[in-house]
Amino acid sequence: MLLIGAVIFGLLVVLMLVLLCCDVCNRSQGQKRPFFSLLNHYLTRRAAGVLSLLQRRRLELSTKKILQVQQDALLYSIRRNRNTQYGELFRFSEITDRETFRRLHPLTQYDHYKEPIERIGKGEENVLISERPRYLSRTSGTSGSSTTLLSTRKTANDFHQAFGVVFNSMLNVYPRTGNLQRTAMFYYLPNWSNSESGIPIGPNFPFPLTSKLNLNMYSTPGAGFEIATEPEAMYVHLLFALKDRHLGALEASFASTVYHSFAFLQNKWEQLVEDIWLGQINPKLKITDDVRMKLRAHLKPDPRRASELAAEFGSGFRGIARRVWPHLNLVLTVDSGSNELYGRHLKHFYCVGVPVYSPVYAATEGLIGVNLWPEKEERHYLLWPLSIFFEFIPVDLCSEGQPQTLFLDEVKENELYELIVTNTSGLYRYRMGDIVKVVGFHNQCPVVEFKCRRGQFLNVRGEKITEGAFYRTLLRAVSLWPGAMLLDYCCAESGLLGPFCGSSDPHYEVFVEIKGVRNLSEDQRYKLDQCLQEDSERYQSFRRKGSLGPVRVHIVAAGSFKELTDFIMANLGTSYSQFNMHRILRNKEFLDFIQRKVIS
Image: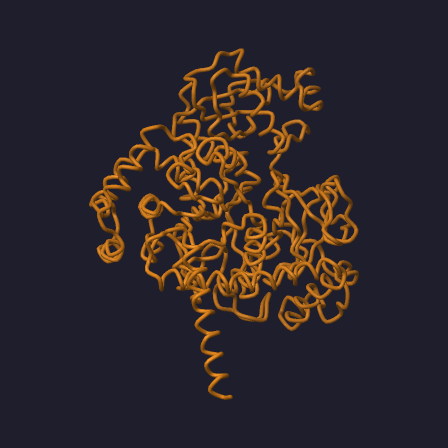
């Protein structure tokens, strides 16, 4: 009997191995990769799938008992940090519920934390939080200068859990993403530094090299993620992505990164094709010998693929993504907020026919929300209730210093609010500056749409035109310029020019990079002002009274906004992987820079 049992068990094991091998081969989509590479990829995907299902279930459960979950999130932060200097100052030991917290602790902004965070950077302990921060996180500086916040292990864990939920949502809607195809990750190594006490200072987002297993799922070898300069890293990411005809996805933090990668490809495709033909790394590429040697080990001449790519590039770049990667399933990148224009370019030009999934709503302050609906055109995010305690200020009260806030269960659908967060990284009732619209509820938890940053209004006379509203009006005006396509834009209030505003009446200065036309008539430029008057009654009223002058539209040279991006990042010390274009300029230096690029 034992012998029969052993034989049956052995047969079952063999059968399972055969089924496993068949599943691996089926999901490989005909790729010529070593079997153990595919098996590693397969097992990693399977493990990720199981974990993502568990994380999704945990999130779903939390949305059904939202009051308890939010109370737990708040008290976790309060109890963990009640013996810190800050906790004693603000009587954390007396806080037992959300009402007490709201009564004892004021609403705060960054100035409230600047000095304690500087002390932590110098090595002082037990100031804001009871643990040593994992690193000091720089913000992107979209609505002003870059600031520094704390990041803990819990912050990183939230991001990992959220991407588990994203993976689950992605598999449910796009099941082919479960195949063993590699992803092109457009990631650029940030400029890390250290505080006086040795705490790393850098951006707050996941890093591909945190897991060696993850690298097997990317088209770029590990050495490619070690390149410190953006043009060289972009070239290498594109080179290895183009080599792989079976590529399954494109991924980046923001749509701007993917868009600029395609624009770079449009200019450099001949060099990239030559490298693929010869199986080399361009000798002129400024990378270290060590990195070059590691990358070359993954290359061999491929004239057939090079010829195929050259033919496609020679046919133009509209829909190029699906033509060079016929099995491409998805573009995974945030395309909401200031990245909406770049997402539009991807969907309507470079990546025609390829779904774009905007997975998370995140900031240096932490994970804010996750998109459970990849297939929907609207970018809606379920608030992440597990670790951040949320409060809300009705948008009409945003100008007040200490307005009464609402809790997560008190907000109403279709209303606008300023977000207030209390996190595990030393921020308490913090006005992060984001304005969101509650578009619905998932079980008991609000679903929101990001609208704009507080202060990111065009507001010369009290007209308060939001960044999003201006963008939609600009798109409408551009549609009235025959043959024109809007590539990029920014704007500023004329007061930022000082005595050089060139008009006696306050007005908006608008800078556009367009394709398809070389110049615009004065009548065409005035179309934007007309559209603004049609879309905003308050703007129209001020224009008719003569207290606002007409919009002034300037065309800038091709590539100007990429140069502006480089200039802003150099000034703020931010990373390419966290940068958001400043649509409304508040910095005179940035305005002066784009003015120098005006050609018409």
